[in-house]
Image (cartoon, rainbow over all chains, first blue to last red):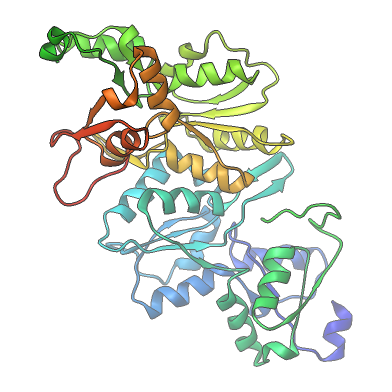
Length: 207
Length: 207
């Protein structure tokens, strides 16, 4: 990372992290010794906020408590869409039913999902990721979610726009063959898969 | 119902009820004045039990507490499949993750779902039905659930077998255009939709 920065190449960190604000995320990485600032991070929640503003959408949020501050500026009264993220412990039976009721009550349900991960690993074991709950709401309401975050094309395009770089001149580096490599390639970028992180030689997880 | 019984026609009650045992279900209907006995009821849980036995499957159960007695005779040690029903309050974050972990830990995940309903109405509002949670697990584990209950062909076939009647000589009466009418017709039966219950003239719910 230091060598990339020293070389003068433009750099963005593209994360699907939706369990914390960018601020918290950046502080954690800084604490680990990484040279990173909030302005260098492209994350699903701020991207979703831009979409909400552009389309005058007022969200009902089903997200992690730590992510709520990212939506501080957004009007949430009388919701006309549902935004779902990796809500973790907030994925209760009551909260899922509530999000469902808001959605099914709309003439044309709008569901925005911060990622489409299947599952991920934590110290105490595998956990269902946002994609699973997204599928539950999609099926119940007969609606297709709009996914914000990797591997959505729009997500990579906004990172490129922020840097002012065309896709042909950018390379994506990541450990996820679908979200990182596949998403970037579909966007016209080259991509490089590292053999660390969640990389497995035989099969690949898709969180 | 009394006229059908008096006529000497054979009769089965086909229900997707999975929030209670057949015993409880029958008692409730008897209390409302219906002439009905447990032997006349075809329900998903007993059908699932037959499948489990035939294929030597030991289930991890994610079902309503009141349904657990239906699985009393089934070996549940060291599970090699997951059975999901309308677990209602048992659809907690912890229970969903546990069912997911059992499933993803199998070499070839087997998921049996007691119905594929999208949602249903209770006195305190709409609730997500088993189908939504089935979809979540299907997506997370990249597996297709085997659905027991209406509108599965096998479910109607077992009701017909219990009566000893070929499909051409049977008629299905119900309020659900997909689960009752569609399922029976695909099975070679004739079907009749009543305009009571969940019937709506404009659109049809699919619980």
